[in-house]
Image 1 (cartoon, rainbow, N blue to C red):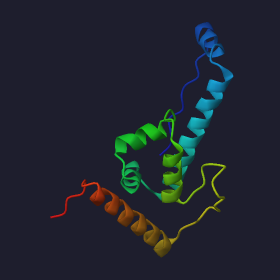
Image 2 (image 1 turned 90 degrees about the horizontal axis):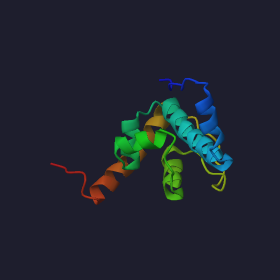
Image 3 (image 1 turned 180 degrees about the vertical axis):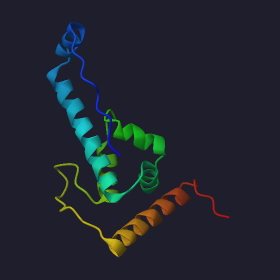
Image 4 (image 1 turned 120 degrees about the vertical axis):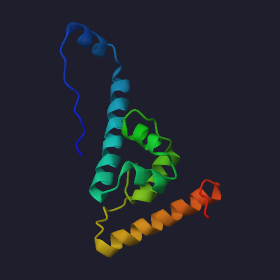
Length: 131
C-alpha cells in the first residue's frame, strides 16, 4: 500500500499563508509526519494491518489511524510502548536497538507473544469476554 501524496498547489494566497507558519511549527509537523511514516513503514515491512497493530497495542483501530495521519502528538509512554511492541527505536533517548529481521518461526513466536500480551491487557480491563 502506498500513501497518497498531496498535490502541490501554487498560488499567492497559499504562499502567503505558508509564509505565516512559524519555523518551529513547520519542524514539529515534519517530525510528526516522519514519526508516523516510520511506524507505518515498520507495519508494512512486517505485514501488519492497522487492526492487528491496534490489537497488539490494546487500542482501537481508529486511534491507530489518527497516529498514522502524522498529526498526532504522541506521549513518550505511547512511543515507548510502540517501541516495545514493534521492537524498534523511535526515540533517540531510548537504548539503541539494532533492527531485527524476523523469519518464519521467529516471526510467529514474536507475534504470538505480543498477541498473548494484548489478550492479557484486554482481559485485565474487562474488554475481552470469553465464553
